[in-house]
Image: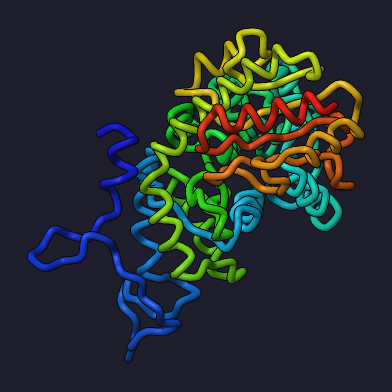
Length: 375
């Protein structure tokens, strides 16, 4: 079945007479247990929860993993679990334009555990291949593709092969693309993570994360990290995320179409200095995205003429677009990323990251056009 069908059909209760169509929410912190617990038997809510399973099974199926996903309390909790696979004193290679909190956590690992952190331009394949080998072999190559917020596209299969040849694990943050657009396990990735908060849940009402691993040992280590660190999700939040996941194919299809049309129009507007979206033929990531992905995503990068003051004025002039951080909801949002002091200094100060939602594209464009014209 296609991903658009699996996202609706997977993770359902068994079809027995009188069974519910949707899985129930089980609100219990502990379970009846006497004597030595049996394998897979519910015991305590920090270890496992039945309400997690339908979401975990569905996401695992979508990503093509042999194991269900593991749900975490947040996207960063999932990323921390994945990065825990880097040993103390090891080397971590990751994009210089990765998510700013991922970069901050990498620096924390450097300070606490002596991990050597190397930042690379993930779109420069030769430079990344060299970085995973020299000055000593990397323990893990971390990939975002497209990157957040610069929308650089990595040559995923080439980088995975090079990292494995050097003995490194490969972790991929697949939040921007979603498994409907890109499935890193098909290219040999070892670990895949998501901020479920974003596209998977899709309605800006939960904070969750997920991590997946095909290898039995890696899956067990990610599971143990979640249990020992207590980075677990509430059952109701996971149930909401599963409900949101059911419409992922429709939302991604509409949001991608809107983003591509808006990118085309923005590229022609005189108030726009630069627009980034892999759908544009002139975009640096277009060829790779067209070759490796099943779409171009719904995140835009916009730089207006006039610098950061013009970018702030543009945000203030919008009425339909919501000025807010995060992304991937049904509503269109945007923000100037360098308003955060922790954002990478190589991100332009006037860059607006725009998360395109599912509204009518003409309404989105009218709002953008009037704001741009006001500049």
